Image (cartoon, rainbow, N blue to C red; front, side, top):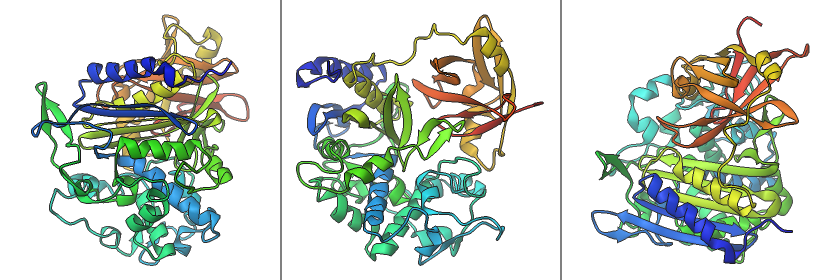
Length: 478
């Protein structure tokens, strides 16, 4: 029996949207789902602009933040299909205005594939001192021009680490990929993506214009202050190819149709099926075995079903895109208030529902076997420094402690998101070293993170790797 829900089973999907809107206190929300080439959900609720009294509609433009990266990846893969670039090319073979070079000339060059998998050695922010300048991280405030990448980088971009040493999420890495697209095609990045992706798929309301090109049709971003929605100051994104797109629910449904349809929807084709399929294959794994990163897309498994996803987060906005490639279903959600990953969580819940699974993931009562848990107990230290990988430090403070307490495997850090103890729950019976921790509070309100332990050649567990930040923590004293 096919587990996929049909258009007649939309009530559970609508209930998930309503529950997210209410539980997270969102201002406005748009969510949709696709099975094959057929939309099965399109909901728009709440306020796009509280002050003007405008409600959210399927035509409301939202900032979709880092979901933009998937457009950049599709554009790059189009050029691969055309033979104009190879994933194994050095990025400097195609850049005309600046170069990406490690300070040590013996370090291998950064390849295109490294940028697509956040393994180039570039970090986010690019330099520690950028944290002191909000305009470099979040962009200049409305009305101020965005510096070109040549102004932002100068003549040389310096990675912190050698390629493939550590996974480090990098907005600048995707900005550089956008420059590669621009330099190869001799066309401005936004124009190329519009002509090669948006228009062929019928996505006529998706663009990179400030305020989405029309303040009367765009959602305003909000934050809650004392339970009152306050507008967030608009900033122009400094790295366009990493997070600068505006889109609508209607357009994102068309995009999902193409992602679920082998690269084509009812309007046209942007990729060949085999190229799109390669984007969802694992090109980086946690612990060397648990799929984590495709070409741009993050990978995971939901009760043996492959899923690929990409979240987006920008001041006052959240977005989430999740796909189940093997059965051709996808979901997208976007909200105009930051709420700890609510949009990405909703997109995953919708896909799980389409798969015939419970919307929520693991049973909190599942415990690690005592003999296995005792092998994992110990202290673990981040493989790279806090200044090299700030995201990892914000998650775990540079050090993790794993303990077996009251029959539960528990992980905590001295600082960061993991400061409060988190129970580690087994994911797959065939892999006793793969766990998930549920995050809540601070930045993450309702998010599950993979925690994968790995053993050395002697069979002793010597490190663990965290999902979300992709960081490696080496076991202390082993």
